[in-house]
Image (cartoon, rainbow, N blue to C red; front, side, top):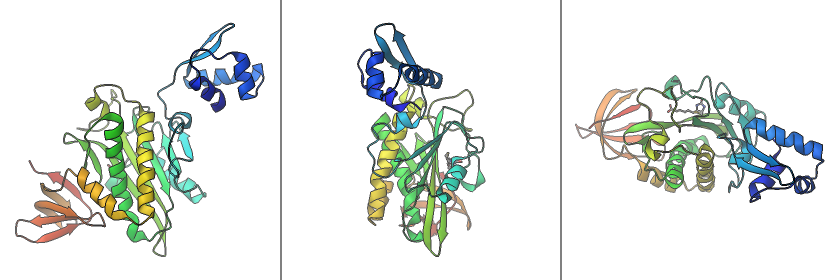
Length: 318
Ligand code: BTN
């Protein structure tokens, strides 16, 4: 990606002359033409007028590192972004890269996935250029007992970015589904690699349905643009999530997971509600009264008994 030329064109109000581009980018006219051509092939609309030079008219709706990484104010998360037009699942690509020494905070993003997956082996429909599908490689050097906080943190970051970037009131359905108006539009999948009770890496996969597609993402699922009533800039939203993640990741590394839990509770759609859960213990019904530090849901059954649920699917009763 001819990033230098792109940066100059982005900063420039109006036309940049070929001479200016060659001088600032330290390249010959011939190389400049080649790079302008490459950018156009990627979808950048660049006007060229003899004697005036080149002007960037529009950028493509893509999650290129040059769009997401530019002006990304993070210290760890997304300092390295691996971009793919298409993969089977960003979880698998991220795991391969993690084993191959990818640094802490590496982000693996794809425009589409053919085998996107969710919890309990479900599939995650990932139409190309419509959603945000990415995995973050974390190597926090902590005990595995800390791992649940990472999943809670990811859901908080998505809700808070939807609020900051799109002005939306998103909520978390336990354990980590992202909802607006009682409809799911995003989900989180965390996969842990550990050795001797220590975390080797955690891959956090986040999928968000962003702009609508003829092919509905999944039955009953929602997309962000339904609520903004306008096309959403996916690169800005992804940048917003990564920036939140970076903040919370440093909180996590400082062992202050209590504040992650508090933030999760503020965004919760489940706490205080009557719920049904299909869990390992069968179908349970009661009021969701709290979550604990492991992300377990504390349920008060009608009998007055308190149950802790660690995994399962929640149905919110009306
Ligand atoms: C769920 O709601 O069950 C979790 C869905 C997680 C989907 C994301 S999309 C990016 C990453 N790659 C995958 O294959 N899955 C996660």
